[in-house]
Length: 306
Image (cartoon, rainbow, N blue to C red; front, side, top):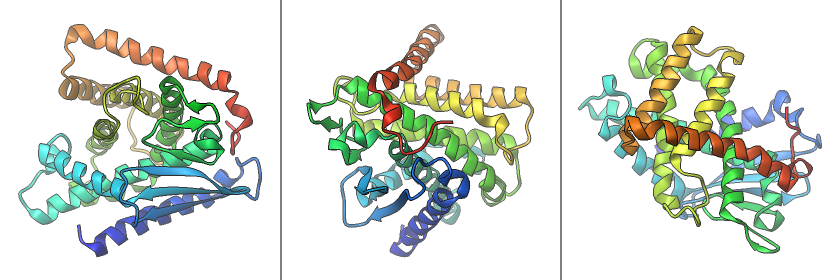
């Protein structure tokens, strides 16, 4: 991607996020009306990471490192070339291929931004990072030392759950334009299917950064993250205006098919191992609220839960 296009992508994402964070609907949830949250793309930091935290009283910053953006770009190229999504749109035309890669990277950056913002409004930086900053791909530290991975992973899942809702709301405003640009016509089923799979594949890409040692990894396994985001998006779908006009059964069918394809194609689960693994993910998700209560997270939140 050229420098000019990098700047355009970063500028679009930053403007979209800034506009969303500045909306009265969002600002009305902040405990302190003077709260401000800014988004920064750090093109001098080549770490594959992102940070979210407090920089002053009532002032917070989300920082996406250029190293992470570059990694997402490489992963987007690999994903498009694999044919896992946009199968009907695959083409040897380099211009069209580049457009698909840019679209996928845009979806991923959008989710990452809202995920980091969720760390801020949920007050996670007050639990880890010595009360100032949350580092995305590290198990956090507090005054007692390293947080247990099980704590870190459940706070990451809460950020995923919030981000799932926000990105779905954003998707409602852009899906028709993207449908015409990518597919040539608005085909709701195809657009929704590819969008959902795109987000799940992001978790698979992140696994390479996080590693596979559950005792040390900062995030839950991609299978568990996929289950959480899938569950929250499906639960919120009917309440968000502007999304593809599909019946309840159609929506449930698309969501279920995407999740099954993700499990079966990318993790090699069999019919015998699928149900036990899904139940394991459900148990993990159910444990998140208990952990939040144990940590007394409500006292740290920048925004009021609704």
